[in-house]
Image (cartoon, rainbow, N blue to C red):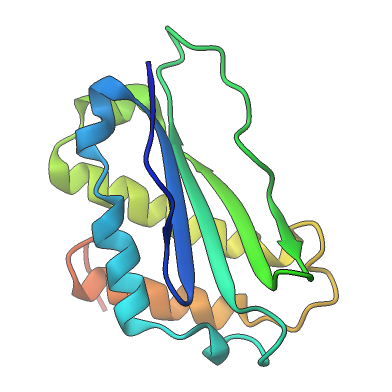
Length: 152
């Protein structure tokens, strides 16, 4: 059975998640979106009127029970000024993970998705500082215990 959480849309970030019911409680997506929204402003990464929101979708479906079909696309909508991305969590790994491991999986996947932004459909000529967003998000996630701090 699939559980689809209602969209969580804030000013600069938005998300949905598609997950199998048996692991739904493991995903703490509300915590992540609130952390991002409270600390980051999309206008720091793109000119006003270019990108107003980064909307991402975590997918964690049991491949043993369900045939996977992509839930949307990865692209930039000039009309909406929104970057859309899909983040596939490894179901088997997630099912066995502790709460901290789940947070780390989500954080690592989110960071990887930021690296993909310049390559998404519609982003080729869009002036967006994905590297700055990546660095700011990584620091924020480390400071808030979502990632292990790197030795300096």
